[in-house]
Amino acid sequence: MTILFHEIVYGPVHSRRMGTSLGVNLLPCDGKLCSFDCIYCECGFNKDFRTKTKLPDRENVRAALEDRLQQLQRERVTPNVITFAGNGEPTMHPEFDGIIDDTLVLRNRYFPGAKISVLSNGLHLNKKVVFDAMKKVDNPILKLDSAFDETARRIDRPNAATYSVSQQVERYRMFQGDFILQSMFLRGSFEGSVVDNTTDEEVSAWLALVRSLRPREVMIYTIDRETPARELEKAPLEVLREIARRVGELGIKTNVAG
Ligand code: SF4
Image 1 (tube, rainbow, N blue to C red):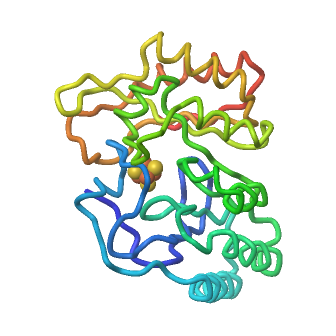
Image 2: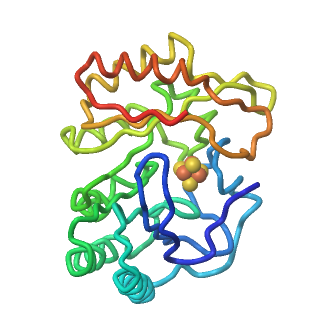
């Protein structure tokens, strides 16, 4: 079943990777907007969830978040993290930088111990306002599913004709290691082509990039729910753990969700 978030602020939910997380969706509430179109996306394929609905504006996001934080305070529920994820790519929102500034103010006012995380495909870091905003949050979580252009294009299906892994990696390098890398491992086929980023060739090349980027943490995960591409399967937990072991040998912390 495809999961779409129908509110700006949702949860808190317990996340496999982040604990008790209050979610913020900056994308349309009745569709999906993303510059990738990953074959594993829990929101479904872009073409199936197009929408004419406007994005929520900055003031609506601020008000919705403040309302929910006040409610949580009354209920004595403390979120570990405020997570920007939702129905697509949060950094595509034209007011993303201002919304992050508002969120920092609200977080400091209501739950100063909560972290702010942004799950991003990293494609828009070439815009200075996006990069600067991502530098302000506690956890910029950036996607890298393969070291090879062909595999990344097959799995993530970026909508930029000029997309390349090397360009993406250079954008991540600007964080000087102060970010979390997130990588999905899976197997199967899509449109008649084999998809498998768990081969030794794939993992070794990916590890070389991890070694050069030295993120402060690597999130290694696999499919958790139904995917829009039907012929995909989870990477086995022992495979994920072996990848994590190899990352651990580099002295980098890992988080595995199988
Ligand atoms: S980047 Fe995230 S939201 Fe966008 S298609 Fe991929 S999984 Fe879905």
